Length: 412
Image 1 (cartoon, helix red, strand yellow):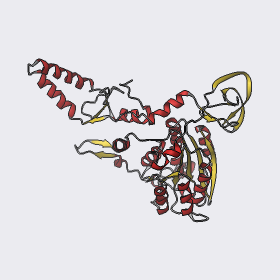
Image 2 (image 1 turned 90 degrees about the horizontal axis):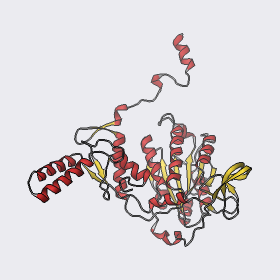
Image 3 (image 1 turned 180 degrees about the vertical axis):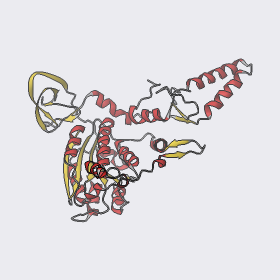
């Protein structure tokens, strides 16, 4: 009877055998040398290899207009991702929105959803990450079927009005294995291509022909999430601006893009201003240099005169896509030991120049035995060396420098 009472008090948790089966051993792998490593480390290495392949000097757009389209049909309640697809999606989308504005401070983002065969616009294009997540969290009910065509039609109608010098993009998170459309979806795909809208898809189910066709026609990316880590990695890859298509250089070129750099104002008494499209009373804010309308945050767009409002740090942070950090050279774990042995042999030879070169090589090997970022001991571990300053880094610091910091600490 006590056992029954305990179960009644924890109805939400359920029995242990009713929960999903966790294969904890699948997170551990063995490399070619017989060493144990985690799967996350292997995924980071694979991401570094892909960055090296695609990290050449490529023309990318600094200003992006992106709609994040989310499938909120009944399939989002499936439990193949713990605790559900919807809960995992909300966590990953929150990180995506934050990372998107961190890497693209001059860009704007909006959120669309589809359920019950209809498309709904949760938020307009704006640069307010907090407003996006609050609106999505309040309106995240899952029901009915998804309509891919209605979702794309709404995105295309909104994006064709934005300036041509910006990237027009749609990133679709699709969970269903079907779509309930009112017409021919191939006509909608052709319309997206005509208006130069790039569509990318992250699928949570099996691959679908129509999604593959959509991404191929619009030069987007299509990936199927195998697990939560792969899901996160696939969506975070959309934070980096895509390469400019060969036929759009002329259309995306602009002699002048008007922007305002407002000064922060402090009032004695609260005055009326804007937070996004919503009016509110506030003491501090930023005054538009053209129409003097007060807004509460940067970057944003003036509600009255539509002038983009930014600060100089936002503009400076956008340049890391144009001048990326050079790829670090990978040095295997056995290479430093071999270099140190060669240095010792050279210093014992008795030749003046050979001894000097040997000591220099030995000093360089000793200085690179610790990570220049976190001071971690790199003995027996692979290291990654900057080609400019010759500083050595561990794998975690290499990923942090290229993905988040965008500056080499040794070169600064």
